[in-house]
Every structure is written in C-alpha cells, then in structure tokens.
Amino acid sequence: MREGVVPQTYWAWQEVGSTRNAKQELSKIMEAGSGEDLFITPKPTQLIKRMLQIATNNDSLVLDFFAGTGSAAHAVFNLNNEDGGHRKFILVQLPELTEQEDYPAISDITKERVRRVIQKINQEIDEKHEQEKTKTPTLFDTETSENVRVVRGSPLSHLGFRVFKLAESNFKPWNAQQPQDAAALAQQLELHIEHIREGRTSAGILFEILLKSGFPLTTPVETLTLAGKQVFSVAGGALLVCLESELTMEVIRAMAAQKPERVVCLDSGFDGNDQLMANAVQIFKTQGIPSFKTV
Image (cartoon, rainbow, N blue to C red):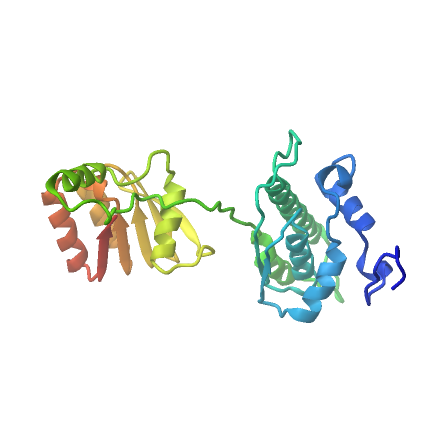
C-alpha cells in the first residue's frame, strides 16, 4: 500500500457504501444539517448488512460493543425487513460527551436513531396494510387479506427496544466487613430497615429482579392491575412481581388466582404485618404456587 492512500476493502463502496453515504443516511434519518455535525465517521448500513448476510442466520443475536450512531441496529432492522428474519441486537455505547444541546452524549444519538428507524419501518408497514385494505381483489390477485394479516402479525409490526444503564444494585448490600460487635450490628440492621436505595424506580427494581431470577432482559413484561394494585406479569404469567408499598389480602388472592409459577413482592409491602405475610404464604401454597419470595 502506498503512503497516503486510503486502505481499500474487498467490497467496492458502490456496493456497500462509504463514510460519505453513511453521513448522508444519518442526516436523513435524524433530519439534521449533516451527519458530520452529529458524528464524524458513522458506519454505512449497507456494509454492516453485507456482513450480517454472511455471518448470521435469521434468528442471530448481533452484538456491537462500539455502537456509535446505531448503524448496526439500523442494518439489522433493514435486513429483517428484507428477508423476514428475527435477528436481535445488543448495542453498547459509553455516554461520551458531544458538546451538542440536542444530543449531549453519543449514546443519546444512538437511542434517537434507533427510535426513528423503528418509527419509519412501522409507518411503512401501516401504509402497506392500508393499501392492501383498499385494494380491489381480482381473480388473479395473489395478495389476499390473509397475506396482510401475516405481515401485521410478523415481528416487524412489534418493533421496539429497551435501554439500560450500568449502575450499582437497587438493594443495599449487607456489609460483612463491619466489626462484629453489638453497636455495628445494630447500625447495619437500622440501615436495612429500608434496604432499597433512594431514588430507584419500579422499572429498575423489576429488571434487577428478572436478572436475579434467571430471566433475560428481553423477556416480555405486561403490566396488570389486580385489586387496584400494579402487578408485573413476566414471561406470560410465569412470574408475578408486585412492587406496591401497601399490599392487601385482595391483591394476594388476585395474584394467586393467576396461577403463576413464582411470585415476588417487596418486603416493605407488608409493613411489618406478620399476619398478612403468613396468610400470603398459605394462600400461595394452597393454590399450588411453588415459590413466593419477598425482597
């Protein structure tokens, strides 16, 4: 290679795109002045799509540890849209500062691009569905209403993603290194009267419980209202999680009636009511629910 010459790949840029194409694509999806204003060297989605065509199958998991603007996710969505695949992705991006008001960190650009790509694809699916509904069928028409329902029922009609930030546990750990004396023990016990850290959200606590219970972060979660209380139904009802601070006998019975395999509640939800706790244990046991825990 001669000095000063840009390295070439085996694939021509006309086939897999270039950095200039990637900037133009980023500008268009983000409705920005120029892709370079947002990110200097975004990756062309055509290049990543070519790599995915070679290295993945329809249900692969794609991991990008240097997500940047989210080009990998964009390429996954595009390829799934073309071949009906079910590929998933995990993007990892440090919140490096950008000095931009709209997107203070690179991770903000990543998230916004993925949102806009999803919105665009979902809109295209909706438009296709509307066109098929108004289309007059003919004797030789192969696009029937059944075909349309297949499109609407595909994973592409339910696109979405979740964002997680690395943080310490929502629960205060027990400090086993404290001096083993009565005063230190009393202090530890006092600190753990409320063992959930301040400012933590129900969503953060829920997903930590999921991970510690052996469920992946992609597990479907549905929010139910049982006896006036919010209950999270995980994996089609296999696990019920109630993070309410004031539990009642009615919500205990309502959860038991769902016949889950496991139930998790906040210990503070019983507010020291030992009778309610004992009744809850018996109700779940009577209904054949093998696991009931409090955190």
